Each structure stands twice: as structure tokens, then as C-alpha cells.
Image (cartoon, rainbow, N blue to C red):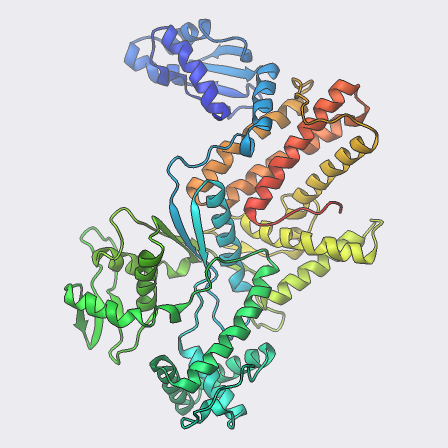
Amino acid sequence: MKNLLDILSEKTGEAFVKAGYDAECGRVTVSNRPDLCEYQCSGALAGAKKYHKAPLQIAGDALENLDKDIFSKAEVCPPGFINLDLSPAFLASFINEMAESESYGYEKASSPKKVVVDYGGANVAKPLHVGHIRSAVIGEAVKRMLRFDGHDVVGDVHLGDWGLQMGLVIVGLKERKPDLPYFDPDFQGEYPEEAPFTISELEEIYPEASARSKEDEDFKKLALEATNELQSGRRGYRALWNHIMNVSVADLKKNYGSLNVDFDLWKGESDVNDIIPVMVEELKQGGYAHESDGALVVDVKEDTDTKEIPPCMILKSDGAALYDTTDLATIKDRMADIKPDSIIYVVDKRQGLHFEQVFRAARKAHMVEPETELTFLGFGTMNGKDGKPFKTRDGGVLRLETLIADTKEEMYKKIREGRPVSDEEARAISEVVAVAALKYGDLTNQASKDYIFDLDKFTSFEGNTGPYILYTIVRIKSIMARYENEGGKDISGVKIMPAANESEKALCMELARFAPSVKGACDELAPHRICGYIYDLANAFNSFYHETPILSEEEERKASLVRLLSLTKGVLETCIDILGFSAPDKM
């Protein structure tokens, strides 16, 4: 189904052709002066030089050939604009076609791609903190957007599970429980199936060991040795690592799940450990990598660079791998197993240089096809009201679990205020609305920008917030339920009538923006554009609702309006599903 602007441009273009001009002159845009008109065509201004005529004359010629059934107003305005208002009847016909079509008239990508979205990036053995929320929320939205657009998308958490933190946990656990069989190099029996620690103990061990390693060089040396032995295949340490992974991933799935975030792949750095030696040899043999001060590097600087781009370091002078190494090996692994057309990295924008180096190294070494897209979608930080990265009151890093719990509690209080709902029901509703408050509060900001986390604002039922969007959907559900309970007729075959007033027409025009708004968001990997669209749609609906006694209208018009409500609800629910949250039945 064509979008409304394309149809209007096509029809206006036909009028220009009939008048002897190029169809391109007929391109229609949304008016930037809504007080004057709804749409505007400025093609006559561009055509003046080509046709050596005054813009007013060209516009006038086109106007004479315009299909007047489409527009309720069409007039020429100096210096040569054509101002247009849509006919309510034509708009109604478009809205009815939209209501009856699959995905509300959205046309999926004509050439679907295989896409990997790399997001999450959690380190095992550590609790998720507020810094993880943006990659999880933005990444999940991007994955869902691209799937809605028709692409085959694989979401990968890409765990940090193979670095020094593993060695720190091992030596930290050894100090606590030195008699465990994992630390006995001569042990030949079967290791216990159950982990010798809980997630709570694990989350104590790592920060203690990490802090100590910064002050105690001997302790850090032991951790480095343990890391090396783990990566070299020491049996006891591999068994411990499996326990760490099982306990950590179970906890990560619970926390990500509480945000409606899920991954198709739970791979990590460890999955490419065996690929690295092969990759390193290939880089050497191909002449892509060389030694520099004892380290192995790939030069990625280009003649067109206006700033310094350091080499991509593959191995340190002691032979150890780095993030560059594992990220490059991960690209190699993905190209072999998944063969994606595109890989998108949803990562803190401060890692931009790192990924520029990795992308260039991958292309230089022909690890990807020339047409393979490697995209860095860098996001800004979530800050407190002081403008600094969000912290607890005592200055510590706030756990994501705590942030979610605090948001749920705040939503619970607001839902209980002046609403006749039971405690149990209020708790259930707050679970759903809190997720919307957090995710919408994040996604409504352009990904690359920093933003202020304001719990009072994000959980408000007024303004550009998740709860406001959900409340709008619940309001529509309530009206539709009343209509049904009062014996209203089945609306499945009902046609939406032409708008009877300005607020109803404005709602229809916002609905007509659905497909191009979501398509634009998908093309730009910009979830905030969908947030902007549904906020405008919710505002248009609420204005219409306050001005229209929907259930007091005569039967035919009432059924038409409820059909319009059904379409509005469907579009809003489709959009919030793309963004990764849902609406309750009541609030």
C-alpha cells in the first residue's frame, strides 16, 4: 500500500504533466504552516528557471488540472506555492484501506537482509548496572524494528566471559574455599554438578577481587596466571568457568527478561578463543599484520583521514589477546556461521574509535564481503539530575535490578493514588507500566545523545512518557469494552466515515503517517522517531476524545468511530510492540 504523501505527489504530478510540466514538480510535503494548509507543493518555484515562466503561472496551470475530488482546498499562494487540504472523503478511503490491509499498510523491505544486532555486552560474574540499560533497550528496539521491516535478524548478547574477570573470580574463590577440587591440579574425578557458589556470592567475589588487584600486584599476577591457565584449558578452571557461566547467564536472563529483552544467541568472547590462533596466522600470512614494539598490529590509517587512527592491535607484546582481537574474531565467526549482510553494534559511543579500527581491519583483511555493512550505533550516557553518569546516593554504581524495582514501586504508588484497584492488581499493572516508563523514557531520546534520568517525569501519566501512551491505549480499550457491553454491533466490516470535525480529521491524518514514520525509523535505526510518532498520535486521539461524545452518537456514526478507535489502538499497540513493551487492560 502506498503511503499518503506518495499518492498525493503522484496525483499532483499528473496535474503538472497535463499542464505540460515535469511530474517531479508535483512533489507534496507536509505544510510547515499548518495554520494555512495541511500540505504544500513548491514545485512551481523549482520549475520557473527550467520553463522560463513565473512560478505563479506554472502553479496556476497545474491547479487547473488537479483532481479536485482529493482536495477540499487547493489554492495558489505567492510566490508560487500550491496550498492543499485533503478531502475528508478521500482521507476516509485511505484510512479504510489501511485498516483492512496487512500491517496497516506497511510495506516491508523489498530486499530483506540477514542482520546481526550485537547488543547487551554484559560481563559474566558481575551484576547488570544502569550502564547496561541503553544497549539492552535500544538494541532490542532496533532488532524488533528490523524484523517488522521484513529482515531476518539475529540478536547476540556478546558476553564478556573470557577476560581477566574470570581469573579474578577464580583466585577470589580459591581464597574463600581453597579445598574445592577445582584447585587441585592432580584431581582426576568428576567435578560436582552444582556450582560451589550462588549468584549473590559470585557478585561479592568479583568486586572484592577486582579492588584488591588494583592495590596488590602479587594478587593481580595470580589472577593473570589463572586467566591464562583457564584459556589454555586447565581442567579444573574450565569446570569452574562452566559453573560461573551457568549461574551468571541464568541471572542475566532473569534481569534482561524483566525488561522484555531477549537474545537469539548467548555467545561470548570465549566462543572465538579457538579461532584466534588461526586468524592471527592468516593476518600474518596475508601481509595484513606486522610487529610493532613487540605487538602484532594491523595498520588501518587511510590517506583521507583528518584525524589520527591508531593501528588495530591484535596481540600485545606478551602474546595476550585484546578486545580488538576478540571483536575481529567474532566478525570472522559470524561471517562463517551466519553470513550476514549487515552487523550492527549497539554500544557506548565512547567506543567509536575501537570499532572504527576493527571494521577497517576486517575490510582490509577481506574478512567481510565488500558489500557487507558494519554499523556502529553509538549511544550516549544515562545521567542523573546533576548531569553526571547515574549513581546511587552514596556514589556507587546503581544495579539495574534496583532501578527496575524502584521504578515499579513508584508506578505502584501512582496507580494506587485515586484508583479503585486492589493491591494485587496494582502490583500486576505496575510491572507492565514500569517497563514502558523505563524503555520509553530511554528510547524517546536520540540514541547518540546523553539524557537525564528523571523517575518522577518518566513515571508521569502526563506528557511525553510511556505511562501516557499506555493510558491512551487503555482509554481506547475501555471505550470499546463499553460499546460492546452496551450491545454495539460488530465493527469488523464497518467502514470509517469521513471526518465530521477537525479533531477527527487530525486523528485520521496522524494514522496515515504510520507507515512512513516507522519506515523512516527503520531506515535510520532511530527508535526515537517511533516514540515521536506515537506521542503525536496519542495527542491527536486524546484531543478527538475530549471533543467527541463517541458513545452518544447515532448508531451508524458510533460504529464508524469505534472502528476508528480500533485502528488507533492497533497502530499504537503495533508501535509499542516494536519498541519492546506492552499495555495492560486497565490502569
